[in-house]
Image (cartoon, rainbow, N blue to C red):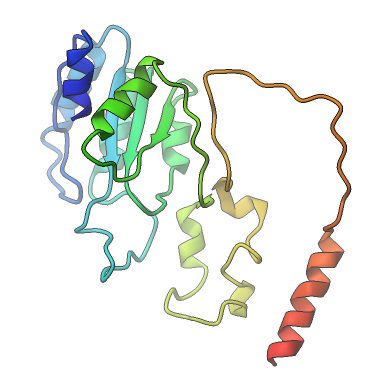
Length: 212
């Protein structure tokens, strides 16, 4: 586990469960917040999903963190603003509230790792390795899921649903985003604009006409 990996590296760390993935029991939140407050350097909070929430035969109806996970996050960050939140999930979850809790909160999307996931997460948290992953999909606000019926397979109706129809206001973190512990600079770059809003609108109109 990440906890054991951190402890093996000499990190003095304790843990508290807080809440379960989707349960409504909040009795452990106070203990988790207390443990976070007692941490001298910061806290690490693990949130996310499991196979009771997402699987090949199970679709989610929204992008919310299930159960009382948001309540746990609010309590932990209030007690310890220097909190790194690790997301264990395959699909996207709405992180709008998490990002608003404190300017010192860090988010690390870890997916569903293999047997060495704990080691990899510890490497990132301790700075042994610099984060280099990039989001393979945009992360949206949960409001997007309420715009239209999720079972509607017509991708263009009611404002559309794929990346071709979403706007910047729909996106919390864009496709390809990723931070690093390093800093980068680019010089002498040139670019030629090949796509404009008008060009995209013309493409959409042509697609609609071709499939009408």
